[in-house]
Image 1 (spheres, rainbow, N blue to C red):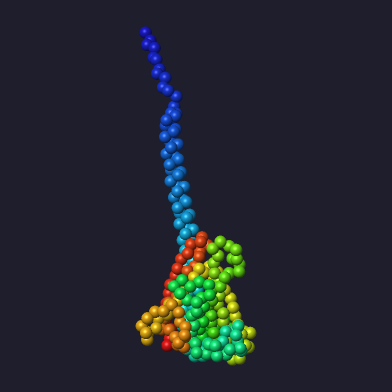
Image 2 (cartoon, rainbow, N blue to C red):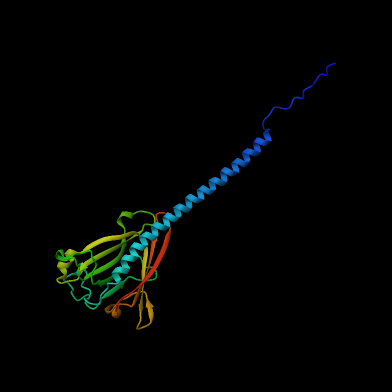
Length: 237
């Protein structure tokens, strides 16, 4: 006698709705976490690039200032400015270094002018040595940013051969912008005789060089962040 075998029918294979919902929830969390991680990495890279560009510009400006101030000379004296060349030749004959329009957060109008033993921008009569020059760093409005929101300022460098006649020397003047990201530049001067720091170097002090100049540069990055950079240079007496 044969015994009939009854096969149990198992339910169809697959996932239930609850299992699918749980899987989708886990997947969503993982995608969100990965998205946040990638976004953070991208923002961090952009921030690092922004800081790196700012440091590069600041280092270029501060290195140039440091190099040229190390060549500052107390002889010869500063000639008249090109605007007044020939009309008042004694205007600056008692000064070797001038800082005008200074302050803790000096902006437009701040000027540092000094005589340098050489600079390398102007080459007189084809010679490889530039000779004594007058160098000025001036803060001005940037005409290319006129009308912009929170426009930056220009740091402009002027160089004039320090030789008479000064009206002729002014024809060989060289002017070019250093950076258009400037927010402010300020100087502090250390006088070893008085054992004190001051924000300006004018009047009787201008007839000699300070012992140390500290300068602080505030720059605006492409992302609009403002960062400050400070360094100091000792001047040869």
